[in-house]
Structure formats: structure tokens, C-alpha cells
Image (tube, rainbow, N blue to C red; front, side, top):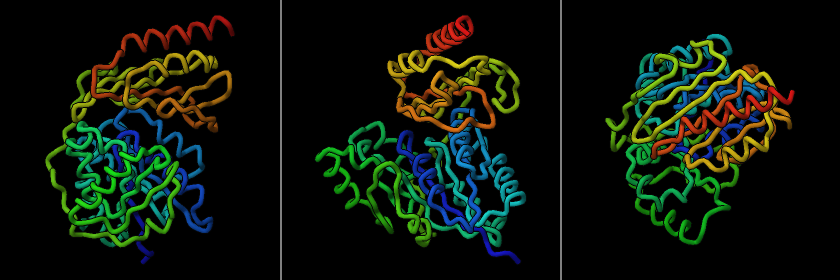
Amino acid sequence: MADPIAVNLITGFLGSGKTTTIRRLLQTHPRDQKWAVLVNEFGEIGIDGALLDADGVAVQEVAGGCLCCVAAPAFTTGLNRLIRRKRPDRILIEPSGLGHPAQVIETLTGPLYRDILDVRATLCILDARHLSSPRHREHAVFADQIHLADVLVANKADLYSAEDELALEQFLLALDPPKTRVTRCRYGDIDPALMDVRRDGQRRAAFPEAHAFLVEAAASDGHSAETITSPWLLIEGSEDGYQRASWTIEQQHAWPKSALEELLSGLPGERVKGLFRTDHGWMAVNDRDWSPITEPDDSRARLVLIDCAKLPVSEVDRRLRLIEESARTSA
């Protein structure tokens, strides 16, 4: 019988830096090992998956809802496909930033995978600046992502104020049970050895019934972006008090990066992520920070907005169409 596959769950709330952390780990993983990633996104469309796929690692995507509820069957299907087709030495699982990890851990450690997977530490990526926000501190999923983690990673530590550092220290002292390991980092740059910390099977969720997913409206009649072929697809929905809108667009021409920057920099959303073919090449935007990427296999433009307030969806859609029209007429 083959050795069990090492598995790590990497959780964290919106904007904590999960995908950046995973990309860092992939860049330094042992070259004699095959690693794979199972990624889940609330936004229906595969932005994180496309970024990771550009790193040349086997990626399986579960989009539209979180792994613990409506996407649960797709989770096991995707995981089985990764195991069967790639037979990796390690799998990193990235749930949605709004995903509750309890059911995922229960599935991974249950009888279905008991002899197949070696489930190791769950890592929670935390932006400690969120600890001063009641909206985060009082969110059940935020709390349980931390609660169920073996390792807590305080990411973006270079951005913390003295007040943030004090809030983090007080928060850590109050954790019961305490974390097995706590570390601070910048840009998701962590010690890979943290993944091999022993999992504590006694950790329990404080809010096991916290998560529910609801699709409010979808321009595709409720289907995901993977099942609909449309040159301009817009899907809206809500989850745990957060609104989201996601676009998948077949770009006919490169769009001016300056116009996209002007649009996205002025948006109120807590989460802004996208991939675009621009006049500067393929670019990824993550919380309004732009970086060049390799052209993804799926060459459609993608954009996801998430916020707790109502999003200006119609206005964003109108301006995106104006950018497309301008690019077309000037081509």
C-alpha cells in the first residue's frame, strides 16, 4: 500500500493572505515531491486557482459556495480526482475566506480517507489588524478558523501598529486551548516545517452551526461559471452577511491597466481580486495591489468583489463595459 498523502488545511478570513502564503510554500517545496492544491472560492470563479495554476502545480478548484456546505460533494469529488490523477506527496487545501473548517476536517479525518490521507497541522492565516474590528471578532467563522487551527500565522506583521501588537498578545493569552505554534511573518513567508506540526484532534468548533450559503441572484440562472459559456457572465450572491459579485469576461482585446486601476482603486469592497489581460501583459489584482502573472490556461478576465455592504454592481458592470468598448475601438 502506498504511503498516506500528507494534507494541510490552510484557513483564514478574507484578506488574510492565504493564497500568497500557499504560493510561497509552493515556490520552496522539495523538488523531489509532487504537491497539489485544492482551492475553494466564494466568488464562483477561479481567481485563486488560476494564480496557483500559473505556478505550475496541480490545482483542483471548487468554486461557488464553501467546502462545508453546498460544495461538499464537489469537495470530495475534486479531492478524489487529485488523488487518483496526480497521486501527490502533499495536498494543500484552501477553503474560502468565509468557509467554516469543521466539516472539512471531519471529512478528511473520517473513515473515507483514514487510510489514504495523513492529515497534519491546520494553519490559520490571520491579519492581526482585524482583531480590533468588532465585525471580525464577532464573526463566528472568523472565530472558529482560529479556534480549530493548530498553527496561527500572524501575517502582514510589518503593517501592525503598537496597538495591533498589543491586541494580538492579549488575544493569544486568552486562547484556550492555546495554539501549538504561533508565528509572525510578512508576505506569507513562513517556515515550511510548520506544516508538519502534529494535528491536535481534540480541537472543537465553538460555532459548528455557523455557516450557511445562499445564492440571492445569478445572471446565469444559478449555474456556476464553470458550467455556463457566456462572453460576459455576472453572478451575485451572499454568505454570512457578506455580499459578492463576480465577473467572467472573454476579453477580445487588452484593456488599459490605468483604466482598471482607476475603477478598482475607488471601490468600497473589502475584497477585490481579479485577473486581466492588460496593455502591460497579464496582471493579477489582489486587494488593489497589481502584479504580473503568466497567462492562465483559462484566458478569460475575472473579477470578484466581496463586502459586508451593498456592492455597486451595476456601476462596476457599466464601467467594465466602457473599458471593453474603449479597448475595442482603439485596437
